[in-house]
Structures are given as C-alpha cells and as structure tokens.
Amino acid sequence: MGNNAVKRIREGLLMSKAELARKAGVSPLTIDRVEKGKDCRMETKRKIILALGYKLSDKQKIFPED
Image 1 (tube, rainbow, N blue to C red):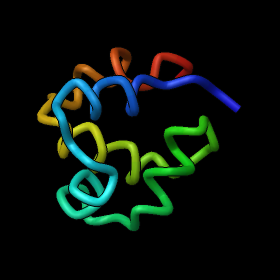
Image 2 (cartoon, rainbow, N blue to C red; image 1 turned 30 degrees about the vertical axis):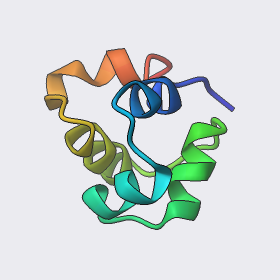
Image 3 (cartoon, helix red, strand yellow; image 1 turned 180 degrees about the vertical axis):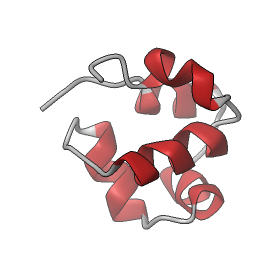
Image 4 (cartoon, helix red, strand yellow; image 1 turned 45 degrees about the vertical axis):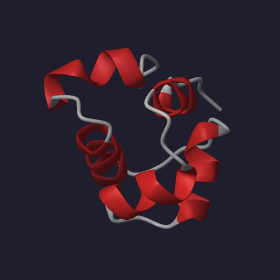
C-alpha cells in the first residue's frame, strides 16, 4: 500500500468524495480505496489527477510512490 495526497488535496479543495468521484468518472468506493492507499489502475490515477484540477505532469505531487 502506498501513500498518496488525494485525500489532502481533495479536502483542501473542500470537495467531497462523491464530488471527486463524479468529476473523475469513477465510483466513490474507488476514491475511498485510493485515499486509503490501495492500488489502482493508471487510467484511474489519470482521471483523479485531472478531476483535482492538476496536469498529468503533476502526477508526482499526488501519487509520489510511482
């Protein structure tokens, strides 16, 4: 299990898990699992990065373990 900054960034944006899930086109359960450090597909990470308003080149800021 790796650490990531998804929860910290999402909360900093005052965004709910459901809102992030809707913007990213994934389920709230997926957001929950990602925030807990569970592994996910690269495509899911890409959707989350873009939904948080970041560029794909900012991947290391959100998913530093990759």
